[in-house]
Length: 363
Image 1 (cartoon, helix red, strand yellow):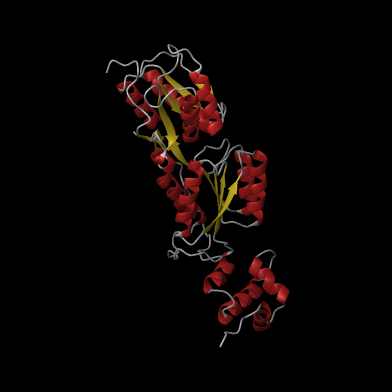
Image 2: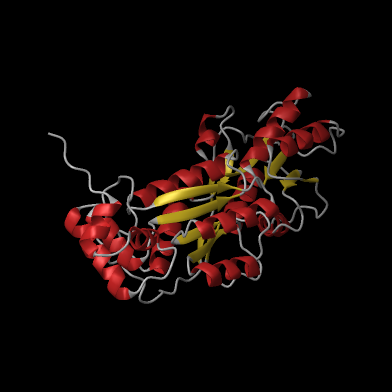
């Protein structure tokens, strides 16, 4: 025999309120007196209109949803980071609302508006152009926790979790020097971008400290395959005596494109050109040749980001929920917002087969 389905009308009758009052309490979109809210919640719990977790959530005004704003889902790094974040959040009873800005500041602003209307509990932001005052305004309007991830955001007053590119860059330069390379070029991101500048400056610092000549071949562009291909073609057209024997890129995507562009003009990797990428997604190991990379700790970064934003939401004391689709409000009330400090994780070098002894080396 099928169970009788409890309706909003049943809840309204039990609580002795109107159907519209029940709807307002359930959606949280309008003010309802504490007395009426309590009566509706008790009716919901008694009739089983929703799981008890929902009724608890009505008291706490939580949605158990975190927004994740990223610039380019086609980039393997962001795809892998999103998977780590989603897994970590789901294991804590949260859903992720993924927003892909396609490197558009206009889309970022549109998505922030969407996340505001969805009443998310928090937002993890990997920005391609949004500035701090926009995120601070979002926090003022929503009260949602906001955390910058991967890329620093100018003028943003909240916490940031990212990496220090210098340790990995220093290891990469040392590795290439040990292989006999002395002409080392760089494919960097767009000049003026905080992320691009930090990565390039780390590589330039490591190269300067090595005692190599200050003049070096540099190519700039977006973190895309196309940028890498263009760089590879341009590099192949240089005279042999001017062509770098090794190149460090500030993006894994650009490294793949560089190898493709150079190979189109008969330059083989790693026999004639060693290539070091940046990120270390799952593709780096299966690509041929397997890519040597300045690795970001993607798993650690994504997991730490979720843990940190949950601390901001003040949900740590809630028992862990099973890894199923979350229901709204299975969380503790936000009595106090916990302070979360910036976290900077070190990069490191992962050696694979895209680097080899320089063709001009006497090793």
